Amino acid sequence: MVLKCIKINRVLAELDIALDGEGKQKTFSIRFIKKNGESVFIFRAIKTGLNMNLKKNAMRGVLPVDVKLNAISHIYPVWIWSIVEFNGLS
Image (cartoon, rainbow, N blue to C red; front, side, top):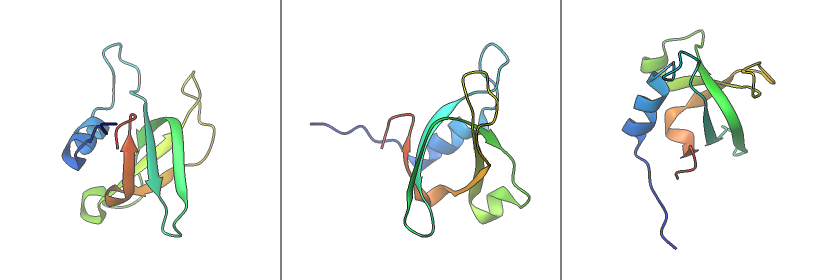
């Protein structure tokens, strides 16, 4: 079995793209590890801001959404080094 890898710079580049070709918010799937060790998988999410300097703190905000891009949970602050899967790539 061959695992496909994705590099952190590619993940960050993908997260920086806010809109898709049709002008809608771009969605993605993501798995990350929280500080307490819990693994969180979000099937469909959009990027969002956090009330902090994202670059300085190496954080990104992700918001789980439904098919119509309505929020279905709260914003998760994600430390970029805790991302273990992005759009199906580990």
